[in-house]
Every structure is written in C-alpha cells, then in structure tokens.
Amino acid sequence: MDELSQKKVPFFFMIDFLVQKVEVFEESALDKNGLLIDFKSYTNANEPLIESREIHLKAFPESREIYRRGFDKVQREIRLGNSYLTNYTCKTEIEINLSLKEIFYLSKAKYKILYKDQFVCFSPETFVEIIDNEVFTHPMKGTIDASKENAIEVLKSDIKEKAEHYTVVDLLRNDLSMVADEVQVNEFQRIDFIKTKQKNLYAMSSEISGKLKPEFQNKIGSLMKTLLPAGSILGAPKPKTLEIILDAESYERGFYTGVCGWFDGENLDSCVMIRFIEKENEKLYFKSGGGITHLSNFADEHQEMKNKIYVPIH
Image 1 (spheres, rainbow, N blue to C red):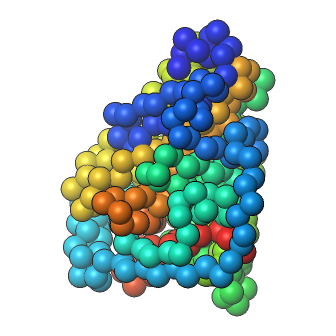
Image 2: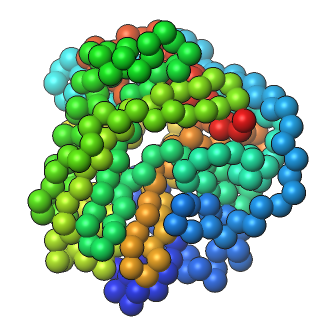
Image 3: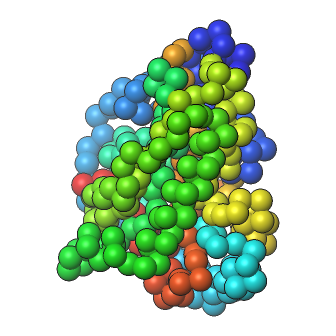
C-alpha cells in the first residue's frame, strides 16, 4: 500500500478486524475479483435494473442467556478497571428475500461493498479521509430509535451514550495525533438520520482533523498499520480491550469491523465495515453490536444489538 500510494497509483484495500488479512486491488483488478464498491469518491457499480420490492427480513438473535454470558464477561473486566469501553458484538442468523447483490444495489448508504457472494456491507461510518494531506476521522458512537419522543435530545443527554461518545472521540483524537499534527475536534455530537425499512435511527458522530505528519504522507499502509484496529469498534484502552473482546465474543469477526478504502492517487476515503451481512454455508448472518460501559444496562444493550439488524432500503 505504501509503494502504490508513493507511486500515486489508485487502489482499493480491505483490512480485517485483527489486521491479519489485507487485500489490495488496483482498479483494473476489482471486477476480476468480484468486488463492487460504491463510495461517494468512486464507484465501479453500474446500476442494473433491479426492481425494488417489499422486503421481508427475519432475524433469529442468539438467546438472552448467550448474549448475557459475553455481556457479563465484559462488565466484569470493566469493573476490574481493565477497560472503560468495550465494543461487544454478535452474529445473528437472518432470512431475507434478496440476494447479497440485490441488497448491495437496493440499499442506500454512504459506503457500500459487495465481495463476491461472500459478504455485503452498507456502512454509514467514515474511518479516515485524507484531503490534500489533511486527515479527518468521524467516530460514530450512540444510536437511538428515531420514533422515540424527543429522540435527539434523549440521545444527546443520555449519560451512558454521552460517556461512550466522549471516550471514542478522546481515543481517536489520541490515535490521530500519532499520524498528524495540530489535531482538533471540528464538530462534536453531530446527529445523523438513518432511514431503513424496519425502523429509523439517529446516530451520533463527531469530526476530528489534523495535518498529516511528513512521514505518513503518501504512505497509506503505514498510516493504517498505526491506526488499526479502529477505536470506535474496539474500545479503550485498545490492547487490553481487544483481549476482552476475543474472550467474550463467540465467533470470529473477520472483515466485519475491519476497514476498507479507496485511494485515488492523491486522496483517501475509507470506512469502518459495519452493517454487515455475510454468507456462511448458504446461510446469512448479520453482525452487529454496541459499546459497553460500566453504565450499560443489559436489556438496553441487547435491544441495541437487535435494532442494528436492518437493511437501508426504503
């Protein structure tokens, strides 16, 4: 990735959650590898004539007992002071009357990725952007059902959601300072509306920026190696929280909560791979979760994990 970015060769990359699997594709190789991407900065997806139709999505979440087992492990570690925010996720079997390709074309999202017939991702969350050697990150943490009364005010004033958001903003501000100077928070607790067929959500984001240090300019690989795993889907402090996640979660995340991005030869746009459906042995699984803190309530967190099982088709 460093070599290609120094030569100013456009490429797309995907890095899994544990930063063990890295796939890099020059533009000419995207189609050959069965990869469709649709970013605001680049797309190789020509809209086929797929008729929108009534969506039937059925989820089969794991039992409350199984969820509680992992949740309690996370809470125990938080009480011991080993983590103050842990992003705990689950894998839920789903049934939907659409193929992965149809989900890709019909869904509305800031970032969309279809990898062969293996997974589709429709992510609302930017990881880092680089524009003229200025680097931006947009941590997204905190969601609420938009139909709730005074939902925005409730989300912004919720003690647990606020603590979670402050933690992630602080973590990513620190992360960004490893690769950039003059790091600052430009926008704090912005509220985005996410429209879906099942239910509409509000999500809370902030924007942090800095001037890329000379040693990271045109070195996309070195930049990613320094910043990953992404703080918003891991927690803090990062090394110990990663240990807790690997112990608490009963499956391997793979590319879910990893990052992918498009480098156009000058600038970079990348996203965190959340809102993720994967095919395994002809069954489909939706991977979702949320941040756990000492203020977390079991029922609320279990519900949030289920709320995030949606497709943004409307």
